[in-house]
Length: 427
Image 1 (cartoon, rainbow, N blue to C red):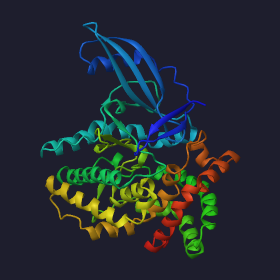
Image 2: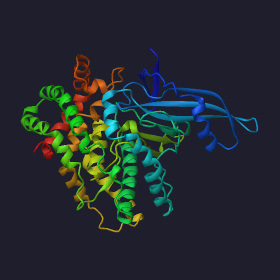
Image 3: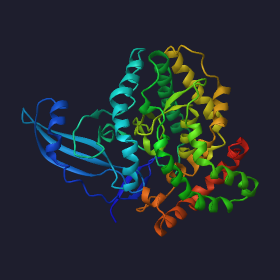
Image 4: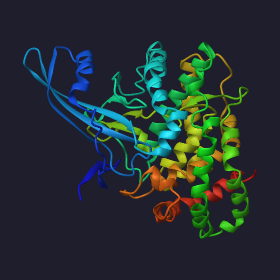
Protein backbone atom coordinates (compact mmCIF):
# COMPACT_ATOMS: atom_id res chain seq x y z
CA UNK A 1 0.00 0.00 0.00
CA UNK A 2 1.30 3.44 -0.88
CA UNK A 3 1.98 5.77 2.01
CA UNK A 4 3.05 9.19 3.13
CA UNK A 5 6.07 9.45 5.41
CA UNK A 6 6.30 12.38 7.82
CA UNK A 7 9.17 13.18 10.15
CA UNK A 8 8.36 13.45 13.83
CA UNK A 9 9.96 15.79 16.35
CA UNK A 10 12.74 13.32 17.08
CA UNK A 11 13.58 12.53 13.47
CA UNK A 12 11.98 9.10 13.14
CA UNK A 13 9.41 8.41 10.44
CA UNK A 14 5.74 7.52 10.57
CA UNK A 15 4.04 5.64 7.72
CA UNK A 16 0.50 6.70 6.88
CA UNK A 17 -2.20 5.46 4.48
CA UNK A 18 -2.82 7.88 1.62
CA UNK A 19 -6.27 9.44 1.36
CA UNK A 20 -8.42 8.45 -1.62
CA UNK A 21 -9.55 11.58 -3.45
CA UNK A 22 -10.50 12.40 -7.03
CA UNK A 23 -9.56 15.91 -8.10
CA UNK A 24 -12.47 18.08 -9.27
CA UNK A 25 -12.68 18.40 -13.05
CA UNK A 26 -12.24 22.18 -12.85
CA UNK A 27 -8.81 21.81 -11.19
CA UNK A 28 -6.57 22.46 -14.21
CA UNK A 29 -3.36 24.34 -14.92
CA UNK A 30 -5.27 27.15 -16.64
CA UNK A 31 -6.95 28.01 -13.34
CA UNK A 32 -3.58 29.16 -11.97
CA UNK A 33 -2.47 31.39 -14.85
CA UNK A 34 -3.76 34.61 -13.28
CA UNK A 35 -2.48 33.99 -9.75
CA UNK A 36 0.98 32.95 -10.99
CA UNK A 37 1.28 36.04 -13.16
CA UNK A 38 0.52 38.18 -10.10
CA UNK A 39 3.22 36.87 -7.75
CA UNK A 40 5.95 35.54 -10.08
CA UNK A 41 8.01 38.23 -11.84
CA UNK A 42 8.59 37.52 -15.55
CA UNK A 43 6.02 34.70 -15.54
CA UNK A 44 5.40 33.35 -19.05
CA UNK A 45 3.69 29.95 -18.99
CA UNK A 46 3.10 26.68 -17.12
CA UNK A 47 5.15 23.72 -18.36
CA UNK A 48 4.06 21.10 -15.81
CA UNK A 49 1.08 20.81 -13.44
CA UNK A 50 0.26 18.19 -10.81
CA UNK A 51 -2.26 18.14 -7.95
CA UNK A 52 -2.40 15.33 -5.39
CA UNK A 53 -3.49 14.83 -1.76
CA UNK A 54 -0.99 16.34 0.66
CA UNK A 55 -2.18 14.61 3.82
CA UNK A 56 -2.72 10.99 4.73
CA UNK A 57 -6.05 9.54 5.80
CA UNK A 58 -6.94 10.58 9.34
CA UNK A 59 -4.93 13.80 9.29
CA UNK A 60 -7.80 16.13 8.36
CA UNK A 61 -11.44 15.31 9.05
CA UNK A 62 -13.30 18.24 7.47
CA UNK A 63 -11.29 19.32 4.44
CA UNK A 64 -8.99 17.96 1.74
CA UNK A 65 -5.50 19.43 1.32
CA UNK A 66 -3.94 19.19 -2.13
CA UNK A 67 -0.31 19.88 -2.91
CA UNK A 68 -0.08 21.72 -6.24
CA UNK A 69 3.27 21.27 -8.01
CA UNK A 70 3.79 23.67 -10.92
CA UNK A 71 6.80 24.17 -13.17
CA UNK A 72 6.84 27.50 -15.00
CA UNK A 73 8.89 29.13 -17.71
CA UNK A 74 9.85 32.79 -17.29
CA UNK A 75 10.16 35.45 -19.98
CA UNK A 76 13.96 35.06 -19.99
CA UNK A 77 13.51 31.30 -20.74
CA UNK A 78 14.62 30.27 -17.24
CA UNK A 79 12.63 27.71 -15.23
CA UNK A 80 11.08 27.85 -11.77
CA UNK A 81 9.21 25.30 -9.65
CA UNK A 82 6.30 26.37 -7.43
CA UNK A 83 4.61 24.42 -4.65
CA UNK A 84 1.20 25.52 -3.36
CA UNK A 85 -1.39 24.08 -0.98
CA UNK A 86 -5.09 24.13 -1.87
CA UNK A 87 -7.76 23.43 0.73
CA UNK A 88 -11.15 22.16 -0.47
CA UNK A 89 -14.25 20.98 1.42
CA UNK A 90 -14.79 17.24 1.59
CA UNK A 91 -17.62 15.77 -0.48
CA UNK A 92 -19.85 15.10 2.52
CA UNK A 93 -23.51 16.13 2.85
CA UNK A 94 -23.30 16.73 6.61
CA UNK A 95 -20.34 19.04 6.11
CA UNK A 96 -21.99 20.78 3.17
CA UNK A 97 -25.06 21.48 5.28
CA UNK A 98 -22.85 22.93 8.02
CA UNK A 99 -20.96 25.03 5.49
CA UNK A 100 -24.13 26.51 4.04
CA UNK A 101 -24.97 27.78 7.52
CA UNK A 102 -21.43 28.67 8.56
CA UNK A 103 -18.88 28.87 5.72
CA UNK A 104 -15.54 28.17 7.37
CA UNK A 105 -13.78 28.90 4.07
CA UNK A 106 -15.06 32.47 4.08
CA UNK A 107 -13.87 32.83 7.67
CA UNK A 108 -10.41 31.52 6.88
CA UNK A 109 -10.09 33.63 3.73
CA UNK A 110 -10.93 36.78 5.66
CA UNK A 111 -8.55 35.81 8.44
CA UNK A 112 -5.67 35.57 5.96
CA UNK A 113 -6.55 38.78 4.15
CA UNK A 114 -7.87 41.00 6.95
CA UNK A 115 -6.88 39.91 10.46
CA UNK A 116 -3.46 38.30 10.12
CA UNK A 117 -1.92 41.20 8.15
CA UNK A 118 -3.20 43.51 10.88
CA UNK A 119 -1.51 41.41 13.59
CA UNK A 120 1.72 41.25 11.58
CA UNK A 121 1.77 45.04 11.24
CA UNK A 122 1.19 45.52 14.97
CA UNK A 123 4.40 43.64 15.71
CA UNK A 124 6.36 45.21 12.86
CA UNK A 125 5.46 48.62 14.32
CA UNK A 126 7.28 47.65 17.54
CA UNK A 127 10.25 46.11 15.73
CA UNK A 128 9.23 42.43 15.79
CA UNK A 129 8.88 40.29 12.68
CA UNK A 130 6.04 37.94 13.63
CA UNK A 131 4.99 35.78 10.67
CA UNK A 132 1.65 34.29 11.72
CA UNK A 133 0.89 32.42 8.53
CA UNK A 134 1.82 31.34 5.04
CA UNK A 135 0.98 33.66 2.16
CA UNK A 136 -2.59 33.29 0.91
CA UNK A 137 -3.48 33.90 -2.74
CA UNK A 138 -6.69 34.93 -4.49
CA UNK A 139 -8.08 32.38 -6.92
CA UNK A 140 -11.53 32.01 -8.46
CA UNK A 141 -12.99 28.50 -8.74
CA UNK A 142 -16.42 26.93 -9.33
CA UNK A 143 -16.33 25.43 -5.81
CA UNK A 144 -19.59 26.15 -3.97
CA UNK A 145 -17.78 27.29 -0.83
CA UNK A 146 -14.58 28.60 -2.38
CA UNK A 147 -11.07 27.28 -1.72
CA UNK A 148 -8.03 28.43 0.23
CA UNK A 149 -4.81 28.66 -1.80
CA UNK A 150 -1.65 28.94 0.28
CA UNK A 151 2.09 29.02 -0.01
CA UNK A 152 3.52 25.56 0.74
CA UNK A 153 5.66 25.86 3.87
CA UNK A 154 7.45 22.52 3.51
CA UNK A 155 9.98 23.75 0.90
CA UNK A 156 10.83 26.49 3.42
CA UNK A 157 11.74 23.85 6.00
CA UNK A 158 8.54 23.68 8.07
CA UNK A 159 7.00 20.39 9.16
CA UNK A 160 4.60 18.89 11.68
CA UNK A 161 5.62 16.95 14.75
CA UNK A 162 4.38 13.42 15.37
CA UNK A 163 0.88 13.71 16.83
CA UNK A 164 0.97 10.18 18.29
CA UNK A 165 3.94 10.88 20.55
CA UNK A 166 2.66 14.29 21.58
CA UNK A 167 4.84 17.37 21.84
CA UNK A 168 7.80 17.43 24.20
CA UNK A 169 8.59 20.40 26.45
CA UNK A 170 10.62 22.30 23.84
CA UNK A 171 7.88 22.06 21.21
CA UNK A 172 5.10 22.80 23.69
CA UNK A 173 6.79 25.97 24.92
CA UNK A 174 7.40 27.09 21.33
CA UNK A 175 3.68 26.78 20.60
CA UNK A 176 2.69 28.60 23.80
CA UNK A 177 5.06 31.45 22.92
CA UNK A 178 3.40 31.80 19.53
CA UNK A 179 -0.09 31.45 20.99
CA UNK A 180 0.66 34.15 23.58
CA UNK A 181 1.91 36.42 20.81
CA UNK A 182 -1.26 35.83 18.80
CA UNK A 183 -3.58 36.30 21.80
CA UNK A 184 -1.83 39.52 22.83
CA UNK A 185 -2.24 41.00 19.36
CA UNK A 186 -5.94 40.14 19.26
CA UNK A 187 -6.65 41.56 22.71
CA UNK A 188 -4.77 44.78 21.96
CA UNK A 189 -6.48 45.14 18.61
CA UNK A 190 -9.94 45.00 20.25
CA UNK A 191 -9.02 47.65 22.82
CA UNK A 192 -7.59 50.00 20.19
CA UNK A 193 -9.90 49.40 17.20
CA UNK A 194 -13.02 47.73 18.55
CA UNK A 195 -14.51 44.27 18.52
CA UNK A 196 -13.92 41.92 15.58
CA UNK A 197 -16.61 41.44 12.91
CA UNK A 198 -19.38 39.06 14.00
CA UNK A 199 -18.18 36.31 11.64
CA UNK A 200 -15.13 35.80 13.89
CA UNK A 201 -16.91 35.93 17.25
CA UNK A 202 -18.96 32.78 17.85
CA UNK A 203 -17.07 30.24 15.80
CA UNK A 204 -18.84 26.92 15.25
CA UNK A 205 -21.16 27.59 18.18
CA UNK A 206 -23.65 29.78 16.37
CA UNK A 207 -27.32 28.90 16.88
CA UNK A 208 -27.55 27.59 13.32
CA UNK A 209 -25.17 24.80 14.33
CA UNK A 210 -26.88 23.74 17.59
CA UNK A 211 -28.69 20.73 16.13
CA UNK A 212 -25.55 19.56 14.31
CA UNK A 213 -23.45 19.84 17.46
CA UNK A 214 -26.11 18.03 19.50
CA UNK A 215 -26.16 15.16 17.00
CA UNK A 216 -22.37 14.99 16.99
CA UNK A 217 -22.18 14.74 20.78
CA UNK A 218 -25.02 12.22 20.89
CA UNK A 219 -23.32 9.98 18.32
CA UNK A 220 -20.08 9.65 20.25
CA UNK A 221 -21.39 9.63 23.84
CA UNK A 222 -22.28 5.90 24.14
CA UNK A 223 -18.90 4.61 22.95
CA UNK A 224 -16.98 7.25 24.91
CA UNK A 225 -18.81 6.30 28.12
CA UNK A 226 -18.30 2.58 27.45
CA UNK A 227 -14.56 3.21 27.33
CA UNK A 228 -14.60 5.38 30.46
CA UNK A 229 -16.49 2.73 32.45
CA UNK A 230 -13.60 0.28 32.04
CA UNK A 231 -10.99 2.73 33.38
CA UNK A 232 -9.84 2.12 36.95
CA UNK A 233 -11.61 4.27 39.58
CA UNK A 234 -13.97 5.82 37.01
CA UNK A 235 -16.85 5.05 39.37
CA UNK A 236 -15.64 8.02 41.44
CA UNK A 237 -16.82 10.48 38.80
CA UNK A 238 -18.97 8.47 36.36
CA UNK A 239 -22.41 9.67 37.54
CA UNK A 240 -21.30 13.31 37.37
CA UNK A 241 -19.76 12.74 33.94
CA UNK A 242 -22.98 11.20 32.60
CA UNK A 243 -24.93 14.20 33.88
CA UNK A 244 -22.54 16.61 32.18
CA UNK A 245 -22.66 14.70 28.89
CA UNK A 246 -26.46 14.78 28.98
CA UNK A 247 -26.20 18.58 29.00
CA UNK A 248 -23.02 19.00 26.96
CA UNK A 249 -24.50 20.90 24.01
CA UNK A 250 -26.15 23.54 26.19
CA UNK A 251 -23.01 23.86 28.33
CA UNK A 252 -20.77 24.39 25.29
CA UNK A 253 -23.10 26.94 23.74
CA UNK A 254 -23.43 28.84 27.03
CA UNK A 255 -19.68 29.01 27.61
CA UNK A 256 -19.01 29.89 23.97
CA UNK A 257 -20.41 33.38 24.60
CA UNK A 258 -17.70 35.77 25.72
CA UNK A 259 -17.93 37.71 28.98
CA UNK A 260 -17.03 41.38 28.32
CA UNK A 261 -15.87 41.71 31.93
CA UNK A 262 -13.09 39.15 31.40
CA UNK A 263 -9.83 39.20 29.50
CA UNK A 264 -10.71 37.96 26.00
CA UNK A 265 -8.76 37.05 22.89
CA UNK A 266 -9.42 35.78 19.40
CA UNK A 267 -8.90 32.06 19.94
CA UNK A 268 -7.36 30.06 17.11
CA UNK A 269 -10.02 27.47 17.89
CA UNK A 270 -8.26 24.45 16.38
CA UNK A 271 -4.76 24.59 17.83
CA UNK A 272 -3.60 20.98 17.80
CA UNK A 273 -0.47 19.28 16.50
CA UNK A 274 -1.64 18.89 12.89
CA UNK A 275 -2.25 22.65 12.68
CA UNK A 276 1.20 23.60 13.96
CA UNK A 277 4.40 23.60 11.89
CA UNK A 278 7.97 23.92 13.13
CA UNK A 279 11.18 24.99 11.44
CA UNK A 280 14.56 23.76 12.71
CA UNK A 281 18.19 24.78 12.35
CA UNK A 282 21.02 22.41 11.39
CA UNK A 283 21.29 21.19 15.00
CA UNK A 284 17.59 20.40 15.23
CA UNK A 285 16.70 23.40 17.39
CA UNK A 286 13.33 25.05 16.75
CA UNK A 287 13.80 28.43 15.07
CA UNK A 288 10.19 29.21 14.15
CA UNK A 289 6.65 28.02 14.84
CA UNK A 290 3.63 28.74 12.67
CA UNK A 291 -0.04 28.07 13.32
CA UNK A 292 -2.12 27.10 10.30
CA UNK A 293 -5.83 26.53 9.61
CA UNK A 294 -7.83 29.56 10.74
CA UNK A 295 -11.35 28.22 10.13
CA UNK A 296 -12.48 27.79 13.74
CA UNK A 297 -11.58 31.14 15.30
CA UNK A 298 -13.77 32.43 18.12
CA UNK A 299 -13.62 35.32 20.56
CA UNK A 300 -13.51 34.64 24.29
CA UNK A 301 -11.32 33.43 27.12
CA UNK A 302 -7.83 32.16 26.16
CA UNK A 303 -8.66 29.16 28.37
CA UNK A 304 -10.35 27.62 25.33
CA UNK A 305 -7.17 27.54 23.24
CA UNK A 306 -5.07 26.49 26.22
CA UNK A 307 -7.26 23.53 27.16
CA UNK A 308 -7.62 22.48 23.53
CA UNK A 309 -3.91 22.58 22.79
CA UNK A 310 -2.47 21.22 26.04
CA UNK A 311 -4.92 18.31 26.32
CA UNK A 312 -4.86 17.32 22.64
CA UNK A 313 -1.25 17.70 21.65
CA UNK A 314 1.23 17.41 24.51
CA UNK A 315 3.03 14.22 25.49
CA UNK A 316 1.72 11.94 28.22
CA UNK A 317 4.55 13.03 30.51
CA UNK A 318 3.65 16.74 30.24
CA UNK A 319 -0.12 16.75 29.88
CA UNK A 320 -1.10 16.85 33.54
CA UNK A 321 2.17 16.83 35.47
CA UNK A 322 3.39 20.06 33.86
CA UNK A 323 -0.01 21.67 33.15
CA UNK A 324 0.19 24.41 35.80
CA UNK A 325 3.78 25.24 34.88
CA UNK A 326 2.82 25.52 31.21
CA UNK A 327 -0.03 27.90 32.06
CA UNK A 328 2.48 30.01 33.99
CA UNK A 329 4.88 29.95 31.02
CA UNK A 330 2.07 31.04 28.69
CA UNK A 331 1.06 33.84 31.07
CA UNK A 332 4.62 35.19 31.25
CA UNK A 333 4.76 35.39 27.45
CA UNK A 334 1.26 36.84 27.22
CA UNK A 335 2.14 39.68 29.61
CA UNK A 336 5.43 40.30 27.79
CA UNK A 337 3.64 40.70 24.45
CA UNK A 338 0.76 42.75 25.85
CA UNK A 339 3.31 45.12 27.34
CA UNK A 340 5.24 45.28 24.06
CA UNK A 341 2.05 46.16 22.17
CA UNK A 342 1.06 48.74 24.82
CA UNK A 343 -2.17 47.00 25.82
CA UNK A 344 -4.15 49.83 27.44
CA UNK A 345 -6.04 47.92 30.13
CA UNK A 346 -5.07 46.05 33.28
CA UNK A 347 -2.88 43.05 32.50
CA UNK A 348 -4.45 39.66 33.26
CA UNK A 349 -2.96 37.95 36.29
CA UNK A 350 -1.81 34.34 36.46
CA UNK A 351 -4.55 33.68 39.01
CA UNK A 352 -7.16 35.00 36.56
CA UNK A 353 -5.90 32.68 33.82
CA UNK A 354 -6.07 29.70 36.20
CA UNK A 355 -9.60 30.69 37.26
CA UNK A 356 -10.65 30.83 33.61
CA UNK A 357 -9.31 27.30 33.11
CA UNK A 358 -11.73 26.13 35.82
CA UNK A 359 -14.65 28.26 34.57
CA UNK A 360 -14.29 27.01 30.99
CA UNK A 361 -13.22 23.48 31.90
CA UNK A 362 -16.06 22.03 29.83
CA UNK A 363 -13.94 22.87 26.77
CA UNK A 364 -11.37 20.47 28.15
CA UNK A 365 -13.95 17.69 28.19
CA UNK A 366 -15.03 18.44 24.61
CA UNK A 367 -11.36 18.29 23.61
CA UNK A 368 -10.94 14.90 25.28
CA UNK A 369 -13.81 13.22 23.41
CA UNK A 370 -13.03 15.09 20.20
CA UNK A 371 -9.63 16.13 18.92
CA UNK A 372 -7.59 14.32 21.61
CA UNK A 373 -9.12 11.03 20.47
CA UNK A 374 -8.29 11.84 16.84
CA UNK A 375 -4.76 12.99 17.66
CA UNK A 376 -3.88 9.74 19.41
CA UNK A 377 -5.38 7.38 16.82
CA UNK A 378 -3.02 5.43 14.59
CA UNK A 379 -3.22 6.40 10.89
CA UNK A 380 -6.37 4.78 9.53
CA UNK A 381 -7.91 4.83 6.06
CA UNK A 382 -11.41 5.06 7.58
CA UNK A 383 -10.62 8.15 9.66
CA UNK A 384 -13.02 10.78 8.33
CA UNK A 385 -15.98 12.82 9.51
CA UNK A 386 -18.48 10.22 8.24
CA UNK A 387 -16.92 7.50 10.37
CA UNK A 388 -16.76 9.82 13.38
CA UNK A 389 -20.48 10.65 13.47
CA UNK A 390 -22.24 8.13 11.20
CA UNK A 391 -25.15 6.17 12.71
CA UNK A 392 -24.05 2.93 11.07
CA UNK A 393 -22.09 -0.24 11.76
CA UNK A 394 -19.02 1.35 10.16
CA UNK A 395 -19.42 4.38 12.41
CA UNK A 396 -19.74 2.17 15.50
CA UNK A 397 -16.61 0.23 14.54
CA UNK A 398 -14.60 3.39 13.99
CA UNK A 399 -15.69 5.00 17.27
CA UNK A 400 -14.83 1.80 19.12
CA UNK A 401 -11.39 1.81 17.48
CA UNK A 402 -10.91 5.44 18.51
CA UNK A 403 -12.18 5.39 22.09
CA UNK A 404 -10.75 1.98 23.02
CA UNK A 405 -7.37 2.80 21.48
CA UNK A 406 -4.79 1.84 24.19
CA UNK A 407 -2.77 5.02 23.64
CA UNK A 408 -5.87 7.17 24.08
CA UNK A 409 -7.00 5.23 27.15
CA UNK A 410 -3.60 5.72 28.76
CA UNK A 411 -4.11 9.49 28.49
CA UNK A 412 -7.71 9.17 29.76
CA UNK A 413 -6.44 7.52 32.94
CA UNK A 414 -4.69 10.74 33.97
CA UNK A 415 -6.89 13.36 32.29
CA UNK A 416 -10.30 12.26 33.57
CA UNK A 417 -9.45 12.28 37.32
CA UNK A 418 -7.69 15.62 36.82
CA UNK A 419 -10.80 17.14 35.26
CA UNK A 420 -12.97 15.65 37.99
CA UNK A 421 -10.75 17.23 40.66
CA UNK A 422 -10.97 20.53 38.78
CA UNK A 423 -14.78 20.48 39.04
CA UNK A 424 -15.38 20.10 35.31
CA UNK A 425 -18.08 17.47 35.87
CA UNK A 426 -20.22 19.73 38.06
CA UNK A 427 -23.24 21.13 36.22
